[in-house]
Length: 112
View 1 (cartoon, rainbow, N blue to C red):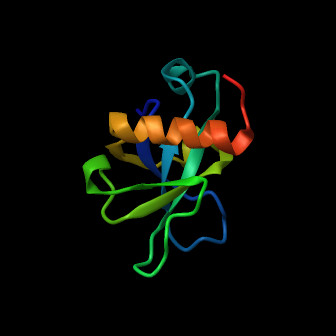
View 2 (view 1 turned 90 degrees about the vertical axis):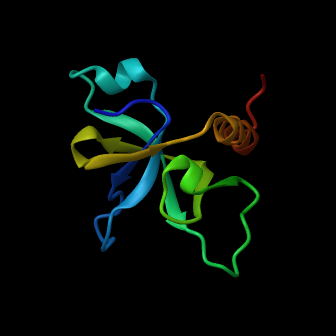
View 3 (view 1 turned 60 degrees about the horizontal axis):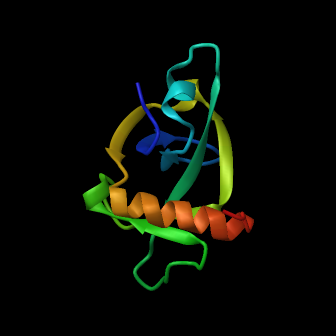
């Protein structure tokens, strides 16, 4: 099973050849509730060496459990079926959780 802040494998776009890492944003109760069939995630893509990190994104790395530098766009939250999640590969570190949270607030111009 998976929980909030886990990094999981999922294929969001059916045309994608491979699964990509995704950060689970839904709270633990939603993840474990068998009546709830979906969870919210941020989708990750491999960061190419010449690329910078976009303004509303956060980069994760091996400290979080991903194999290579991976960029997560905090301006696009996806809803995915729990059944499409094939496994947990890591967990977002506490400092990166803060970064992700701040970027989501910034991206959606949420007032705290």
